[in-house]
Length: 216
Image (cartoon, rainbow, N blue to C red; front, side, top):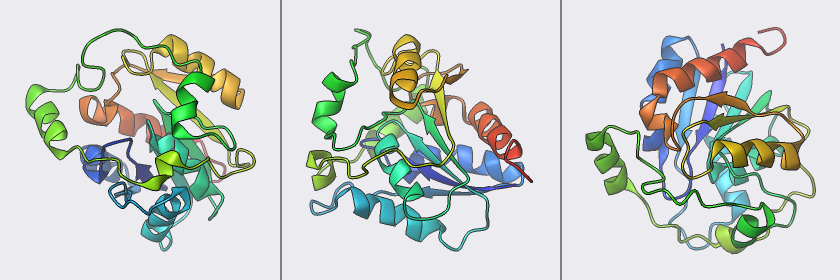
């Protein structure tokens, strides 16, 4: 059993994880989905990280931090603030030291899939409509700040890509994980919003990561 800190992507909210949380709890894990202060203009990357730290500080160990999509910028910062047993990046962006959000796309060799509906194509229509209704504006200064760590944290890190992802295609994500983290990505079916399209399968994969931790 573990505690999961679940970090949403750009324009999202804690609601993005609302189907995954009960699936993890059914497996005996604790799970906290965090709302990042994306609509606060003065909020920088460390403020994002502090929101996660505050939400899980009193939770039981071991702690696993999960970042989805743009959440990959925040998740490693949490590992620099508090003890974290495992960092999991799900269909995520991997920042380099000093890199700004707007620089990442070119630096990471991002290639647009050219397909329509890169976010919700495999999400049930009613659920996709609700997700779109809940999308939040990214107004914080974080997206204009250099990513603040001098190096990737020492926390063990796994990258989980989604084979049907139209935003970060499987081919690109495999290369991204190798180039930025020198790791081979794990893989599962599903599109970019796998938190909504395949919550049970995602929870199963996350719980398996927890079960693989030493002394767990």
